Amino acid sequence: MISVENAIQTLKKYSKIGTNFVDKTLEKANGYLLAEAIIAPIDLPPFNQSAMDGYGLCLFDDYKNQNEYKIVGEIKAGDTKTYHLKKGEAVRILTGAAVPSSVDTIIMQEKTSLHNNVVTIQEEISFQKNIRLKGEQVKKGTIALEKRTVVNPAIVGFLYSLGIDTVKVIQKPSIGIISTGNELIETGKTLAYGEIYESNSKMLISALYNLKFYDINIYKVKDDYDGTLSTITSSINKHDIVLISGGISVGKYDFVFKALQELNVNELFYKVNQKPGKPIFYGVKNETQIFGLPGNPAATLTCFYTYVHIALQKFAGKINIELPRKKAILSNAYTKKRQRSEFLMAKYNQGTIKILDQQGAAMLQTFAAANALIYIPENINTVEINDTVETILLPL
Image (cartoon, rainbow, N blue to C red):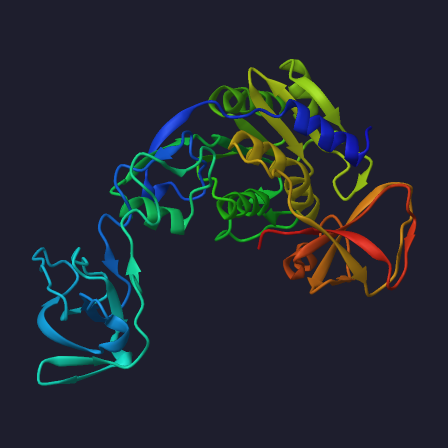
């Protein structure tokens, strides 16, 4: 059995970085990392552009003493017609419209008055005001976005404005989830005595979707050794990461660990000195990473956020592969019963944190109310009110 810190370092060392690239349309690229830098194919904006509704002026030589300009036309966004203004002339111009080269500055309409086709300027005039210059955001041929940038909605809009609709990204892992247990049945069926509704696989799918991982397949297996062995074998052959829910402990009908041994999975750690989630397994076979997660749902989710999250984000090419951690001031005390690390479901709010009631490996209702986990290392037995504690912020 190893410590939480050693388990995390093992994951960081042995978890795989994805090496395959795939082309994605921008609508489907959100959350992916760019596999290569994006070179701007055009200037942005591609022309001098009006930043607001107003009047474009061709300035007098003594423009500081002249404030009346004759209007000779109008330009709205999308117009291809241009004007060659003479000194003392102006065009009505709207936001987004192309600015003629003869326009020296744009005055917003709120700072003008209009009478008999002559606009009077009611503020001090200066050059190139309210003009977005050609190439101001990015110039053609320069790097618009660096390699490994995470695609987000703003980037989608930015790339479309450059005329780009497809990007090459680092492919995310294919994930198999194996749900084990005779007692598990699907919702919609009537529970018999001793049965429970299966929730762990649905919970893991939701956690994966929340992190923008979508290539997922679900497998269900009863507490049967041959079935467990066959399902794990098939999943390892099909997926980059396999998450096995339940069956990893040492009970009479827990067959997962035995199956992993028979398959010669390279065990990197098995059992971590922590609560909840002690019986967690991590290993590798044929480039596939395998996690044996505890069956209790709160323990499953704790291990997912502490360990699986690292493997997922590293595979996807991320730099920050752990959930963010902060120091917070504790509002209630807690004493551990054993010398082990503990993850406590908690509520974080603006620098303070409260340990929630009903802590336990099966307490999903408590987890549902939490937005953070407090991490108490194994060498600390008691935390008091106003102590500073390490806080792991959950991706809600």
